[in-house]
Image (cartoon, rainbow, N blue to C red; front, side, top):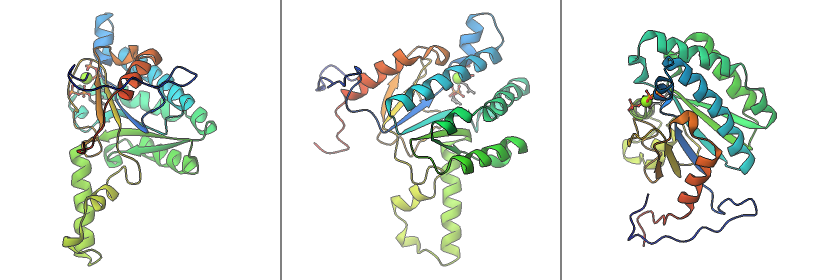
Length: 250
Ligand code: IPE
Ligand code: IPE
Ligand code: MG
C-alpha cells in the first residue's frame, strides 16, 4: 500500500472492469495453507490440497484476462526442513498435479519449471521435463512453477555456469554484464516480475525471485492463500494500476 503523500493516478478500466495497465508478470507466493487448515482443526496437508485447487483457479483466471506470465512459489529450497510427512504430502500433490495438466496444454499455456530438479523424486523431475517439452510451442501465457527453488541457489547456479564459460575461454570476465547474469538464471528470456503478491500476512520474499523482483511492486494481504480468490486478485490489480513506477527516474 502506498503512503498517503505519494501521488496516485486513478485507474483507467476496461469494459470488464479491470484496469487497463495490467502487469506483464505476476509472481505469487502461495503462503498460508498450513494456517488455513489449522484454523479448521485439520492437518496441514488439507490446506495444501485446498491451496492447489486455488492455484488452478487463479491460473485459469489469469489466462482468461490475458496476463502473459505468472510465477508460483510451490516449494522452496528451505521447505525440505519440514516434517517428512508434510514434504511427502506436498510431493504427492505435485505428482497428481503434473498428471492433470491437459487443460493448460489445450489452452496453449507454456509450462516452465524453475529450480533445481536434481533433488526431486525422479518421476517428478522427468514429468516436469516432458511437460516443458510438450508445451514449448505455446505462447498464450507462461506458467512458471518454482519447485525446489531458491533465489540464492539460482544465483549460485548462474555463477557456476558463467565461471565455466570463462574457464573455457568463451567469455572474458570483464565482459560479464547484468544481462549475462539474467541470461543464466532459470528464468532466462522471461520478463522481470511487475507485481509480487504474498498472501497470509508475512512481509518477506522468502528467497523467491530475488533478482527478478528488484523493481517489482509488492502487494501483501492477510488473506490466506486458499482464500485468495479472483476478487482478491482484482483488488491487487487495481492497486497495482495506481502505482507510480519510476524505475529510478522522475
Ligand atoms: C505455503 O503454505 C505452501 C508451502 C510452503 C509449500 P505454508 O505451508 O507455508 O502455510 P503456513 O505459512 O504454515 O500457514
Ligand atoms: C514460502 O513460504 C515458500 C512457498 C510458498 C513455497 P514459507 O512458508 O516456506 O516461507 P517462510 O518460512 O514463512 O519464510
Ligand atoms: Mg508459510
